[in-house]
Length: 516
Image (cartoon, rainbow, N blue to C red; front, side, top):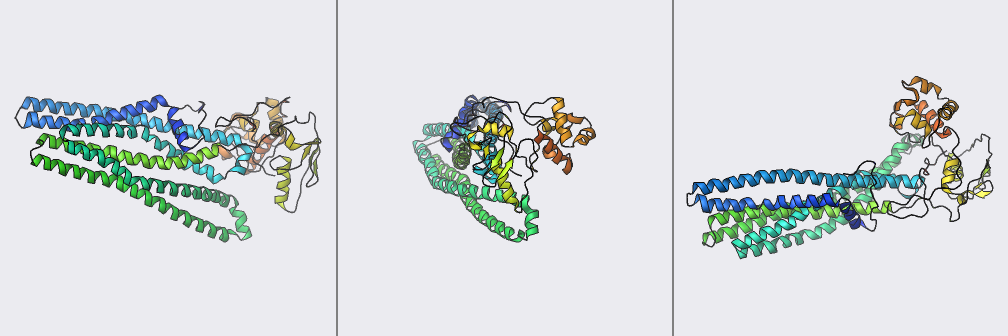
């Protein structure tokens, strides 16, 4: 199974089906083992009916106890061996599914980090949450087709061949009946795929709206807009529920047919076999074996339908993942230039704001949104004509801009780790630089108050700290423990998850989300 630090590989982003196939080929050995184990396990399920027929015809009817005990022992031995195969099949297929799950999570998280600040501008938070919570699980579950799906095809052929040795009529019914069942369920698969696609889209929009409401509930309440947004959310929820009913209707028909049609099929074949036995064309033992064969055949027919159901949902989920992986971060200027070698003025012509080097500049405005827009432009999070040392900011290598211009949000994320790691950020700093940053943020009391000082563990989002302490830790991190190391040229851009290179954010170049 994929290791937490292992490279997940380059996914095939040419479509949903190709992405699913990539997940299979990335663990080809395990997938082949799962298919082999499942095939042998399911095929051997057809062997006990044959052994039972021999026990009846060779042991029970002629009253040959030795033959009866021998065939009974064979049934027991096959049962025990097949139980062991079932355990190994389940273990292998679980590893196949978990590998696909973790591999998809890694490429999605890697793409999120690669997009950096461009993530929120290209895709909604609800879309990312829906992919991480629902689509990843749907994709991994669909790989069941690698094991039982292939085994169902092989077992279907084996049972048809065994029935042909008993009765040509029964074999023809089997060979024609199973494709007929698949044909009846096929149109429902297309309907489910369309309904599932629309449902996932609506779900992503509604999830994003939940996040927006949670973040701005206090503001909405103060402005008196809580009722308006609640009504909108209620209306969207009802629409999502109605779409969920349509998905559930298609799913219920597929599952009902997947269970009911094989049972009716079993009854038909058993009735035909009973007639043949009454006419003396097959023996009692063969009648028992036919019933056993058809009972076994219910399982591959069920997996035929189940595999189609899982794949139809997985393709929808895989297309969403592929669409997300195909996004590109903010592109650098074709002839990107170096940042100014010495401190230089940062100027926004649209607002007239000038940030002078070595000076503390405070921006005050009557409308907070306008102030945030200025900060976005100065941090190169929005299109603008901002200049840095007389050079347009969008002509400077983005990695160098991110190293030297930091937009620190009051609610910026704090990741779990030691206080030293939080203050240092993504760079390595010596003790003196870290001490300067802590002192500048007036956070000395935090260090002294924790049991292990800078080496004390801090929970995710700083939940083990008070609100004021979290703000000062963010300020210390923004201070960065000292100036960044100068670099003549930016490193080559990080290739995209789908194998594309080109312009993009360099490692660590994402920066914090824009904000004042």
